Length: 507
Image (cartoon, rainbow, N blue to C red):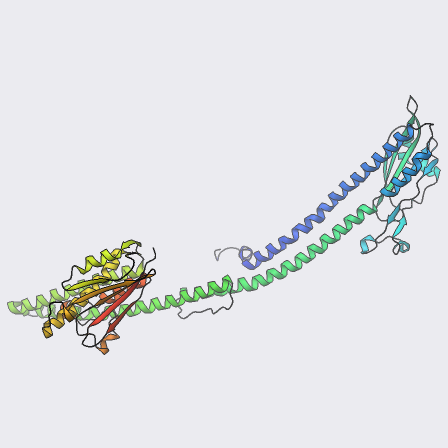
């Protein structure tokens, strides 16, 4: 997010805040459950009411069809008491005047007093497990005056809800008319009541559990968010600060974060990248210094020759020819240096496409270009995945050096033989299923101890008079290393030198 964004937007975009919000989201589930508990409560109460209605309707219909007709048939009273006890309800049968003909007695409620929400107003019931659900207003005159009873005695179903007298919650009252005879004359009413305390007890238990889950989720989520913010946001902030310091040109920036998680791996990769950048900058600085030094000599020579020609040497044809030849030679050397540098930069800057290559055919084709060179192939395999043009460049550079060293010894010592002897160039290729080892051995006099440590340096050459730029071996090393291989040199004074390099197959 841009620096100019509002402060609150930057705060919301931070990982710490997003982790806290994500953890807080965990609390929404139990809180939503608490809100839905009220809906569930209404559905349970409606189900309770429908059950009481069904019970009252069935009982009224059964009483109306008993013979002989009476409101309290003996065969029905025992069954009614058993059903009322099982359902936790109170069933009464009233006559036309509202008097109680049959009563199953107060419903017995299992009381659980753990938790302050479930305690009854009267401490008398806190230590008992079963209590009667009392109404407190059960006289016949009171029953007759109730609207649900009046409705039932008038031939209509009656429904009513009242607060429970000694229990938390309310009582549901259902009154159904009892009709008898062909005309369906109302003979009385079945009056069923039940407290909602068991329903509320279950809901309160669920609600208590949801509240505890919500609080626990909030606490655990907050703790987890803080831990994650400390272990993620803080290292990322250090990474950001280190990246800013590197962008501002600071060298040697390191994080050194311990651990084995992804953040620690990222920090180690960041340190590796920072070291690689430092090495790259050092390489560029060293290369610039080497290029400047290498270009300085031919440029100074060209400038000196041009100044002498300007100061009168041009009037002397012989001198003019000499100076012009020197300028052309230096210009040619600069051209070769520029070409080689471009080739080196192209190799180091990007990786060319790797394709399957018949390595044996490639080596054989290069070796045939050099007189006195022979190929000894002892590898089990013949193919690898590489950039053929670059691999050919490596072979050509090494064989050029080998041919030059061999010619120098032949010219110096006049050594020749029919089988080549030390004047022979040998290319030996060994390998296994993992890769190839290629050795280019010359017939020269070897490399001195002083020069062994410098042969891979850029612009170092012992053949400058022959047009050497000192970039052939560095280019060869860059190509081999870009392919995942290694280069090396073995040399014994008087016995020639052997340059070797490895290339993985990677098919």
